[in-house]
Length: 76
Length: 164
Image (cartoon, rainbow over all chains, first blue to last red; front, side, top):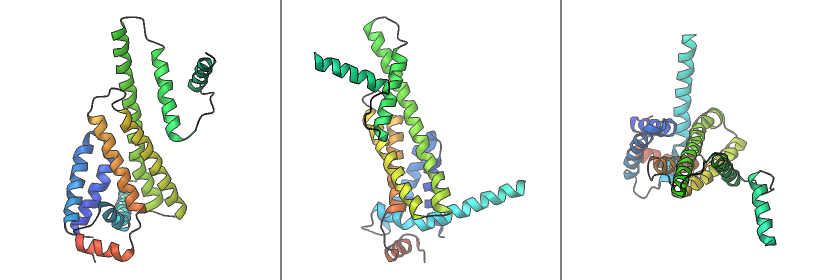
């Protein structure tokens, strides 16, 4: 997975799950990264880009969940 | 006169939860709001009318913020729900359930957004939090339910992120 895509997916998850005081900052980071991605393909809509990310987002989250489970099992 | 009495009775039944009104999520949220209001207005002590209204506005704003916080927590929980039912394993039933949940949360959020000015909450962090959470819901719907053909997805990922 490219670093740009990884950063965007990370920012997406963070903006959705962060505590309220961090929300504006996290959302701004995501909007900046999303805007950067959209400028690379003129005419691309936000919804279309989000729709194209579903499989990669699932892959990204599965990796994170697996890593969290591994960390937990090492602690036990 | 008769109509007035009927309306008063309807109101009493509605506020006490006896009315058989619409049971959709918005209605339930609205009724919850009204019931909460009743709970506090019962404690108001007589005083100047300005004091009464000021106190009421303050309590309404405080309760409204609690309801917004509850809705924001539920929106945040949706990301964990997605991890469990869409990321690790996915089924058409769960996907359909997700869409219904997003729609319902969005409707409540729109109701909260439209109520911000009504309850006298400052135009402020609360309004901004609602706006941002509504955007999260729109993004989540687009991610899981937008109908983007596989070829187009590959093209987007290649052009935007150099993904093969």
